[in-house]
Structures are given as structure tokens and as C-alpha cells.
Image (cartoon, rainbow, N blue to C red):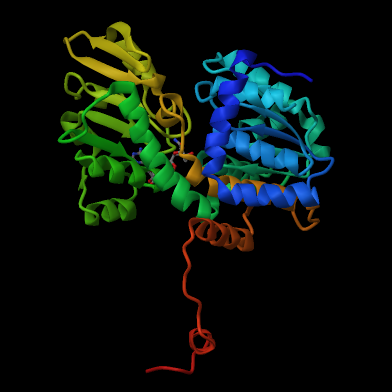
Length: 417
Ligand code: NAI
């Protein structure tokens, strides 16, 4: 079996940490038990480009229990947990991922995952799908479909569908309500703060934190930063979301103004060049810059490099840039996803729901629905509803049900006051 990981001595550590994560993933465990009995993925080859974390290992083990052969590569060069990669290799999963791999190795690993000649692709950011379309078009006829985990990937795939170049159907897992309302908000919120604290050991109480982008991720980060006593400023380009932030009690400002006030800046927009030279020039001495959006494009690092007269690494994830006027700016985790680079990514309990959607979407694709054309599809609403129900059950939380009269009332237009 082909694989490329850092160190197989890390197998016991990886196995133990995967077990710890799985304790928090009851919905996925339930799906795995059914998959093991029914084997709905028998004979399926799956190439997955996902953050190589303990939670992803739990997902991969679920797919394998369903009968699939899986190859896994990283969806970010810094997010791989080397012990997890090793533990999966020991379970006969072809893993191609090493924490800190360079750009060339990152893309070579993607190509090696595709050498499996998959029936299904699983992406987090659409690098696998775009590589198929640009370099491995020979694989297109054999592809039944793919899944996409994150906002940025779904945006890229919709652009491909719009331009008529998408070659096979994709299920947008990110858009399931049991995914983005929880993973993007509570997962990114908590784990970004976790990454910030692990990288810097900063006191957040009283600190001015600027969150760029008030989408699902941004509101999670803002909420958790405020919860720890930070004074939070939001920057946005969307009027409705800005208004939501205002009514939630945050300061909302253009970044040009917030740049002068902020002590910590966190980008979560999915957009490029959000923090640019004109903003860097206004920042105070000691400002900290971090990103939790998918790609390393939100902070204009090239300008920061050009402005700097010197640069040194102070801590594992903290680079100091000294500017000509004497100010120092600190970039965390090279501008990569802070929560995955400096911490461990989302907590398992939230990935339980995201990856339950993944596993059940893969099952849909494996069944092969002739109605699925090369386009981007939502997760079937029955799956979304089932994941919410399973999660509540696992948490031991019961809810009410509608009485027959209530059902009639809600579906009728004849009943008024
Ligand atoms: P979203 O679409 O809900 O929110 C993005 C927000 O950024 C929007 O409100 C948009 O108006 C705003 N925005 C765009 N350009 C801006 C600019 N120049 N300045 C200020 N605001 C701007 O997207 P979501 O789900 O919050 O995701 C954001 C990013 O985070 C994406 O790249 C996504 O893939 C990534 N992500 C990262 C995760 C992680 O583990 N770190 C987990 C989930 C998503």
C-alpha cells in the first residue's frame, strides 16, 4: 500500500487520540455501526482531501466500515496531525500528508490520492476537484460524485458549475444546516480562540479584537472573544450582516478605522486581500494578525514582507515583522487557518454532525442516483433532519411533538383568530 507520512512511531499516540475524539462523536458511531452491518460502500474507492485530524480519522474509519477503500491527503499543509496520519496508515488507509509539507509536496500528495482512481471525491476547499479537472480529466468518467466541506470550496464549485466546466455532481455538505450553523459558528468560534491562545498565551480580557467578516464563522469568533472579555469590533462589506452585528451589540467600522484601534485582527471572510498595506500602515505597534478563513489569502502577507525591515520567529506560531518606523506586527501561523495550525481544529462533538452529513452524503452518491447531473446539490433535507435528531438523542435531550390539531392548524389557511 502506498502512503507518505512523517513517522510511524507515532501510531500509538494517534490511535489513542482518535479514540478520545470518537467518544465525542456518537452520531458518526451510530452511522458506522449501520455501515458495518449493511456495507453500503462496498467496492467504492474514495479519495479524500480533508484536514488530517482525529475527527477526520473517525470519518475515514466510518467509510472503511462501510466497505470503502480510502486514500487521504491534507487540505492544508499545516493542519495535519502526524500521529493521526500514522495511525490511519496502520489501519490500511493510504495517507499522504505531513505537517508543514511544502507547496510542491502538498500538490503531489493530492495527485497521489487521485491515483486511487476514485469513484467519489471528498474535499475541503475544492483542491481535489480542481486538480481532477485541470490534470486528471481521465478520471471524470469514473466519478459518481463528490462532497465539499467548506464555504470557500462550495463557492469555487458553484463558479465551476456556473461556467459549465464542472464534470460531476457534488453535494455541498457545508450548506447542510446541521453543518454550517454549528461547525462554522461554534466550531470555528471556539477553536480559533483556542489557536490564538495556544499560539500567544494572550490575555483576552479588555483586549480590542477586530473580527473581519460577520458570516457564520465570524459570529462564532466574535461571540467567543466577547465571552472572554475582549472588546470586539466587526468589519463587514454586507449591509445586512453589518446590521446584525450592530444589533448584537458589537462596534462596526470600516477596517481603515478599526486598523488603528485593534490589538488582535482575525480574518474569516473567505475573501482575498482583506487586510492590505493601507491597513497595515495604520496599525499600532504590537498588533497581532491571524486568519481562520480557508485560504492564506485574507491577509496581504506579500505587502507585510515588503514593508518589513526584519523578521524573526518568536514562538512556534508567532512571526515578528519589524517595520521601518519601529513598529512591530505579529503574524500567527503564517496566515494559515489559525484554529487548525496552532490548535487542533474544531472539537469532535461538532465535527460529529459535519461528518455525519459527509458519511450519509457519500452513501447517497454510492447508491448512484441517475438524476444527479454535474452540478452542486444540497444535502438531502431528510439527512439534515436525521443528523439533528440523532444528535439530540445522543445528548439525551427530548423535545415535544406537534399534536394532530397543531399539525392541522399549521397546514391550514382557513383558521384565523
Ligand atoms: P460566510 O459567507 O457566512 O461569511 C463570510 C462573511 O465575510 C460574509 O458576511 C461576507 O460579507 C464577509 N466579507 C467578504 N469580504 C469581506 C471583506 N473584504 N471585509 C469584511 N467582510 C467581508 O462564510 P463562513 O461560513 O463564515 O466562512 C468564512 C471562511 O471560513 C471561508 O473561507 C470558509 O471556508 C472558512 N471556514 C473555516 C473554518 C475553519 O476551520 N477555520 C471552518 C468553516 C469555514
